[in-house]
Image 1: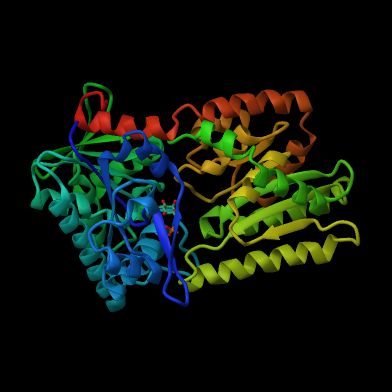
Image 2: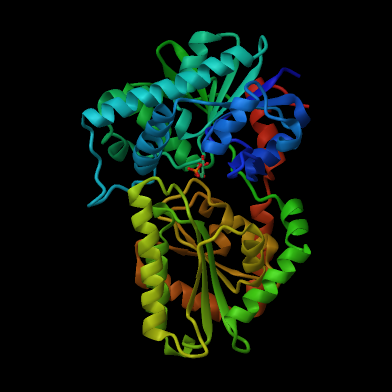
Length: 482
Ligand code: G6P
């Protein structure tokens, strides 16, 4: 089998630098890390150095990070000049492309395409070129390269120019905006992103819906021809080349989650959360997210408040565990949102809390074991994003749940395509509708909840990360991967 390279902004390991210069490695999780484990150490992972600790690690080990830090996974981290990195990651990827694909622009955070944008865009091009250079240098003849996400949309095209011998795939972990919204990007940017992705032999998405909107953008913005190939796959013909479009709906990692959620540290946190919830027989509504505008945490809190307003019988009888872990705090719009989440949670507690009942328990410090504990306890899981590529929380909770969980799920989450039949599906903007779904979820009879949870767990684990990854390789290489 040929060499496999994976490229993503965030790699499988990050480093913290302490005051006396010691580096501590922290390994990350997620679908790609699990997926890559299925092909052993045969892949090379190329990623960016994100913080000062990462940069220091690269200075000490410029070609490869130490295998013991990465769990044996060969990793090359790129030390891209800070200003270039920051403009590409914060200025373009997270402030522009993320906002476009999640359709998040609204007053006062509106798109601004001025000279500052143009200079940040040039840095996005340089950052993508740094990845293309590293991949071109590392790839053996005929290797397969899997490029990830909206940070690296230009890489497939740039890499093809440098190394036409390679097989190149691109995977989008986000939604893709429909053409009318996508076209708010400046024309040249809109075209460059699409042409960059089309540099791949195959571009893949989490759901058919996002694959379709990508194809629609290619047709409208580039005038590309969209065809359906022999195996029912979409094909996009543009500039004399053909790019295949694929769909791989990443599932939850059942084996890992079931084993991890039964460890003593999770038991301890389950007991601690029970204590915090208090009250005999009290129910719990759980949400776990990065503090991220697309996750719609504030509207979720308003819906919980509306539940307490409209259904007084739930007062004192339900606690909303809201875990909102910090994310992208270099951006003012994320910091402001983080403050708003805390303020709204406090408002609900001020309005309804009593000496023996705290309606909203908000935790902002990242703790995976505590998240798993909350999954185990949840009577109801609230997953109400405005738009989401997939949303793995929706898939993980039913797998980990101790006694069954009712899932309130946004119709705009990619996961809804697979889980919608057994979830209570909501319009994420509709606070009243979400409150009514929470009420129905809390009132769901135990046997119905258990039956739905079993079906949700089966659907959620249909494509585990290892298979998800191998399927992409097989499809790209046109033969079984192993
Ligand atoms: C989304 C993106 C990923 C990204 C993650 C966390 O899931 O699709 O590419 O890594 O968010 O965001 P961050 O900016 O912290 O890497």
